[in-house]
Every structure is written in C-alpha cells, then in structure tokens.
Length: 322
Image (cartoon, rainbow, N blue to C red; front, side, top):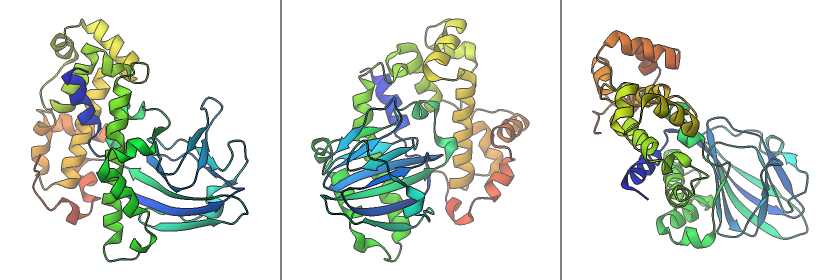
C-alpha cells in the first residue's frame, strides 16, 4: 500500500475521544441468547474468554462464530444478538442488564445445562464529533481470531487483565478501565484496518490515489487555507471530478469533510487543552474569528465559549502538546 494510505490509517487510528465505558463479564450456559439494541456513538467489543458463541445481526449480515480467544469489534454499535446457536431467539439485553451507565461494570449469569461460555463485553461511548465519515463507513463487525490476537501481545495481555473480575472496585479503577479499553480498541483496529486497506471493495477511498491523498491532507494539514479548487489541484484532479469522486467514495462533500476535521480539532483544543480560545481559529484553518465562531455554532449548535464551559476544568488544565 502507498505511504499516503499508511498515513491515512494512522489518522483513522487516532483514539476516538472515549467519554465512558460500560463493561460486563458474562458467564452463560446453553441454551441462551441475548438481543442487543443499536447503540449511538458507541463501539461494542466482545472478547471470548472461554467457550464459543454466535453473533447474528440483520438478514444481510451472515452469522459469525466466535471461539475462545477471538475478539469482535462493532465500530458503530450495530444491533446484534449473542447466542449459543445462530437461530435462537433471545431476551433483550436491557432486561438482564438494565443499568449500563458509562463508568460502571456489571456481571451477567445465565444458568443452563449445556456448554459454558465466558465473554468480556464493553460499550465504548465516544464523542460523535471525532468519528470521521471514513470511520463510520467501516463494516458492521470486525473480527480478530485467536491467532491474530496472539500476534498482538499487548492487546492479548490487556484483554486478559480486563477480564479479571477482581479489578473492579479498586482505587482509580474507573479511569484505568476507560484507558485500558481505549488502548484495547485501538490495538484491535490497527491489524484489522491493515487487512481492510488491502480490500478496495471495503474501503475504496484508501485505494484511490487522489482521494486517499486528499484525505491525508485534510486530516493532517487542515490548518492551511484550503479551497476545493486548491485541494483538487494538489491531488492532480479537476474540481468537478474531485468533488464527484470524493462524494462517491467518502460519502460526503469535500468541503463538509474539511469542516468536520477542523471542528474536530477545535473541539479537542477547547476541551483537552488550555490553549486560549482566541488562539483556536488560526490553528484550525480560520483567519477570521467571526467566521470560526459562526462555523462552530452551526456545527455544534453552541458557541466555542459555551462548549468549553461545559467541559470539566481539570480535563483541560494543560497546554497543548500536539
């Protein structure tokens, strides 16, 4: 794959700004089936600690079987069912785990007479503004089998640590759990996206030289005064061909994609750093403070000052290091 594609994967792999994690350890014996609803701005993770299970979604999604040591990731929280058999009807997840607030943990036990399985499950809530259109275009599920997990020792050890029930209730466990799941999520996406990048049918934008390069530029050089014409020239395409191809492969117009990246960085600067608000516009590609203010309010529905004011002060008590 070209270096530009590798750069793009690096940008896509930047950790999403997780806002909280609910995790649970399941011990289930056949027969069993649990139906999970679609989750908004939430990635789902299932790690098979012991035994096997089936994962089923809609009619267009073939059932997946997980074995001990396998890891399944649902980047956009697609609704799905976990069960001992693929066609078994289940009970709603909210009926057996009604309280799933971010920052908490749960335990699920399903008694039965059949084979036992143990599963580590987590809902990773993220800031929707940090999810690019490329991220949202990822497949409904991504699976690393045990062999692939074993090739990532840090991922394997992190998952094994998270699957130990005794970690709950220790001092600082909530923050440690959030960071550990964030690391596991990114470590899992890395090999998965390497594999996807070689499949043009899955992520075609990565394989188109002009669009791939444009995505890297938007992701890494968003502070420059780009116009659509300038972007098209930079990647060696006409404006009309660039705009049409970008929309087809990425799912949105290049202007909106650029604005989204700038707004993503502006939100990060306002909430995670102590950079003065007046210094934010030029750092995200706006020469006019008024233009930035209007664009920010249109994107987020609030002003930059209000957005920063709603974020805990202790989370932005350092200068930006990026």
